[in-house]
Length: 258
Image 1 (tube, rainbow, N blue to C red):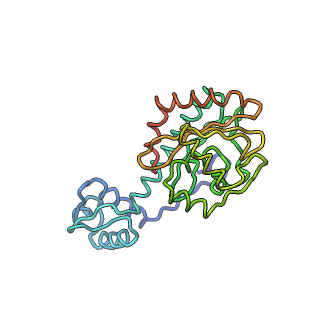
Image 2: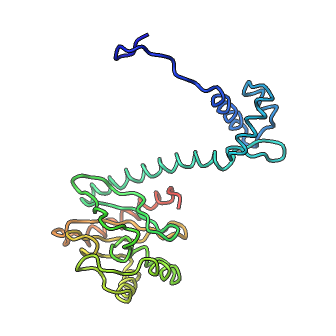
Image 3: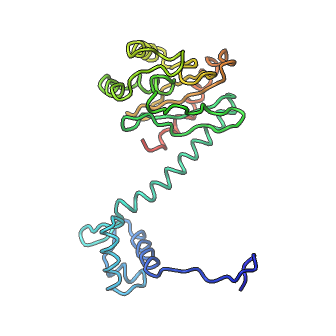
């Protein structure tokens, strides 16, 4: 048989041991409370000695674990499903941010503070309203952008002090805060106003704002950016973002694993 390019097509190479292991995992997945080896062998259509060998291997690798004589999924198997779910969730929130960006005529971001680092989880990607180019690592410059300032303002004193010890305040544009004291005064204002405004402090030609949102005990934020020649729109766009967040956007934050 020839393929569409006229070349001889050969059947795919199948690895029998992998096929058997997958059938065994499917059999385990059919039992929420687990099943013993003999039952799994029968349901997967495998010889018992082969089943024992595969069960030992899958347990050693963390895909299964044995509890009270039955086999259930292990952490490695759970992580596969969680990774796929997380990708779908992030794709979903990216789509929602894209809709918000079109309504606001601005780039829109969702970020969290995770394990001591600023993490931009998702951002709208409209070529008409491109997001800020990350020309200096966002994680090391939280003091200089609205996203980072909003997140730092939500931290407790010890966590904020530890972050600034790792990433000291430094000016990256002529408009950046000059010292840690200046930043701490700024963060006080952010907490009072419940919003961080930033004018060309991270990137020349760009203004930004960020509002805090509730995601359990985690620090999180929604943010927007505009070209500097549209700075007059920033406050009105921020107010619209806040209203949108109160209605719909924050519910999506809970679907992101923090």
